[in-house]
Image (cartoon, rainbow, N blue to C red):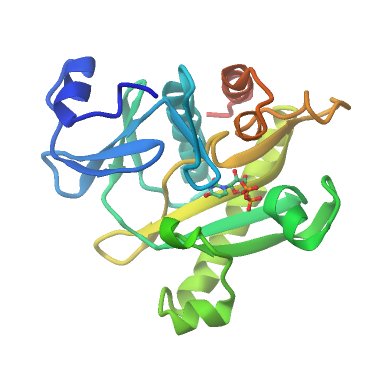
Length: 259
Ligand code: UDP
């Protein structure tokens, strides 16, 4: 495991600065307060987990790569008038973000069948999905992030019907932007997970990250189903060269950037 997931002091020392109070530590990121109550600082760790935390390791350079890819994709969203929590990237492993209350839903968009969809439905890996599928999972590790229905979201009072419609519309808009951009990069966007938050005024913003940790990304024109994978499936399925896959995504994103 990486030794970087320690206290604010340890990480602050590493970065040569004083960090605010540590507010939350997740599997891949740590959240710190800043002097401004409306702005928080995210630190991207090298730690990787899969299967609800059962598989753990550290991938050298992952934090920097995911921070850079996420920052770039958030800026791309902003350029298309899709609001995000992104403020700026003060260092290679840090992102300043607007303070939001996270909606406890993981919003998954699927363009091609893979992962849990194949396991649960028997659909063959690689089956095209049209129109794209939007799914809502309950963000709760103890329950194993279960798939929800609209009626369950209502029953559990997680979000209003209007909010669910907003999340679905935003997720599909984000999918259109990401699909087109990754296509320019020679990468097929198979599926991805988004998280959203509400700012103080109640506006829903895209939050969390968009990276090879949260997307399935396949190199176009690569017939070998193992070699085409550039994302966290390299880690989940012990394919090796995880960092190289992530690095390749970053290089293609930067090379094809319209920003
Ligand atoms: N995903 C994620 N975090 C999660 C679960 C899924 O980022 O806790 C992403 C995953 O990387 C993939 C998409 O959401 O791009 C769909 O994942 P799936 O439901 O197929 O689950 P998995 O096969 O990862 O268990």
